Length: 387
Figure 1 (tube, helix red, strand yellow):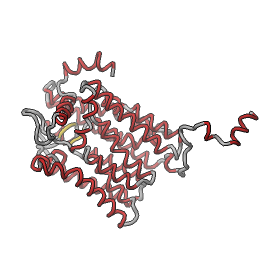
Figure 2: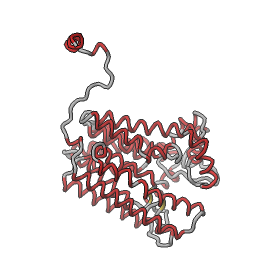
Figure 3: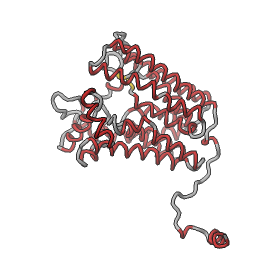
Figure 4: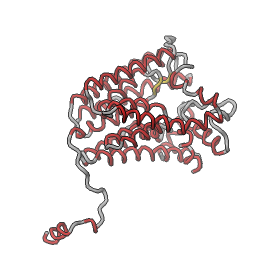
């Protein structure tokens, strides 16, 4: 953050006008703090609110802390750290050492480090809500997993793609219906206030994610880069392709009997390859699942980290084209490197599915992280005295 504030930020702001969404985060937080209603009270000339409601309220703490770039970078970095800590605590019962390595890899991954600082993006928050439900479900907290994934859905819709995976792993239909009902109940509690206050505007924002209002794709996706050079795939078509791909991945996981961790990895990988609106930071999602293999499998580790290099090219190309700094013909270069990144990610997923990870071993209740002197048994004290 210090390097960003002293050296990197002035250069980026001077050369890349649209590199950060910080001004959008600040504007929405100010709107809420001043008594406004998101979706309805959008200042003239500003972006309309296209995200689910909860993410906007998660911008309030850094705005209350001053609202400067450093406050937001600290806040986003906090969620990066929280994601890493939760991963370690949830997985340490399988293997304390490898769980620590996996959590450390997540914390130090370029995806989270760059986005929480130089990128000034909210993806570290999204990543936390993306992995938390699966960690809770893995530890037997099925109800907590459903609550977390529903809250994640209303923070950013992306985590919703994993809910069918969780339902597959619940053996009884009665329990599945219970979890669906719980998700619907939480959804109603969140959405009803907005439906009451600003129904028309609130019902319009999901079109951003379904690409109903987009002429082609957006971001650094295949469809987005193709639309830049004039090859347009209608938004509705892209949405249908995404839905079909997700259902195909759910069916594949069901037929192969994959566990929830491998199923989430497959679904996430397929989603990123076909969704018409992605950005570089989204690749933290498969990276988090690959981390349990990366902890002791060099082949997976090199691919999980290595795919970041080619994937930076289409992100840079897309941003530069949007800012008018380069011609649209460079989109072809971005597309080539995007496909290279996809191939590396798919290959890492292939290796992971064929390899064992520490989650395949029996779970054992882990020792407390913090031990008080009084918790040491008398036998242990005797042994210590003898030694």
